[in-house]
Amino acid sequence: RHKMSNKSAQSPSYDLMVGLVVGSAVTAVLTLYSSREKPRSSSVFSSSSCCSPSGSTTDSLNVSHARQGHDLVTRMLNLFESTWGNASLSNARLGSRADGSTSVKALSGRCLDFATPQEIKAALDEAGGLEIQDQGLDGQGGKGDDALWRMLTKVNDFSVNTSHPLFLNQLFGPMDRSSLAAELLSVMINTSNYTFEAAPPVAVIELSVLESTAKLLGWDFKSCSGLMIPGGSISNLMALNCARHHKFPATKEGGNAAMPPTPTAYVSAEAHYSFLKAVSVIGLGRENLVKVPTTATGAMCVDSLREAVKKTRASGGTPFFVGCTAGSTVRGTFDPFDEVADVCKKEGMWMHVDGAWGGPAVFSRRDDMRALVKGVERSDSFTFNPHKLLGAPLQTTVFICHHADALLSCNSSKAGYLFDKRKANANFDIGDQTFMCGRKTDALKFWALWRYRGTDGIARHVDALRASTYCFAEKIRKHPSFMIAAKPWPFNLNFFFLPKRVRLLMEKEGVSTDTCSDDPLPESIAAALSTVAIDLKTAMMKSGKAMVPFQPIANQTAQVFRIALSGDVEFGEEEMDELMRLMIEYGDEM
Image (tube, rainbow, N blue to C red):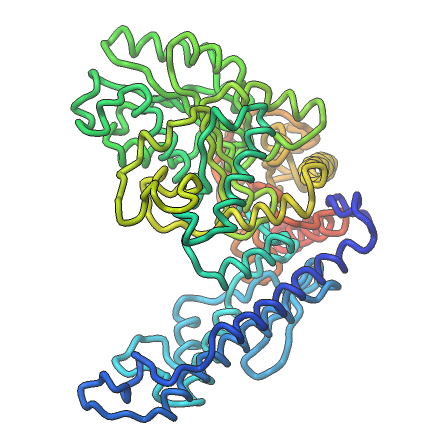
């Protein structure tokens, strides 16, 4: 069996090792949870508490309540161990059914159990009841625990199996198991990494991860600041906020009224929609976000950027920010960072690189990939999501600035009850650098992944995903039932499925399917394909066998399918052939 994943570069015992990592992690969590969460002699949630209005006490019942809650968590951890601790199931998930049976969702199994909202509600009601009620289940003793357990397993049953090889619907997928083990620990320690005293080891780990990221970009960490942030959208908001404060520092106290007229930001037409939301949140307004046209391949047109900046200045506006993209959501495009950096340097603008999707390309050692990200090191800020391409559990995002004081000077509120330099090891208290308060220990997940695989291992993983994408593109190009919709980028492939009637029409009109270009389809063909992608996606989802997204693309009027391989995914010859077979089976007569 041909596999294109990074595991080919690992030893044959890779699956066994990661299985042991997760199995050991779950065992450790079970042991530590048992030692930390002893049954309490009373419960503030119990109606029989000494603090209840009646003043009655029933210590034995309270102990029972605490014990039941503990057992419920233990049952869930045991289910988790059976799911992820099994090294032989590299691309499967065990689903424990309420009736005690077990289903294996592998390539030959189901990606999802398709159901309507009404069907899901009915299943939860049958299992114990969806609606929140005044009286909780904990008053029913063991029956309450069983009812909640039945409902939780129903949630598992109806959830999409994001570890299935043909779950290709989002920019995340199967989790890296070393990172998953760290996520278990993160849940168990249940703390917030805003200060060292609240999360001592994670505070040390987060700074280590940020320093390693700076080194990857060729930056001296002493001239940097950074944070783990919940998602790429928040990172883009953080970048805009930092850029505004850097250019117009008076805005921290005086708001947007302290800025000159028409402060203007620029992104490409392919940029993520979060920029539109971010300019609204910080009060710039969408009219002051210029969408720069792209080249035929979808990358930002630098000549158009120059013209847009010139136009802004001519109208009395103030350019201050350019948001570049390293791997756009739809086409997977990378902007020409070096050229954009030249414009930003000349015009005094902050350059941000949104690498939420394709940013891990900076790990690659391939010459063509390094050329693709050349110039990222000249940016003022950079972000990427390890929970996408690399397979860390949701959400895990790195944000880093090439300015030592950028985050603190922009966001610090100096809340004395939390941040006080007189505290021990206060130099590790990085939480005041963000506009949020509570912070998950996300650094732990990425640190475990990076430490376990090493920089070389992540590079192999990134290169393997690239190789799989181009391998699948070649299969698509050669098959008469498929057609490439735009030249593939390293991590994204957009294509059409061509039902029999459309193939006959194309043959009649002399349109070849064996192409790999950005040219649009003739209008007659596009019209014939108008609903194919929508109907085919729905049919495959109802079958439960695959989830592949359809989407609009700038160079085509018909909807296209997108393949974007992410996470610890196996997408070799067998998976490629199976996906194409399914699309033909359900779509050929459409």
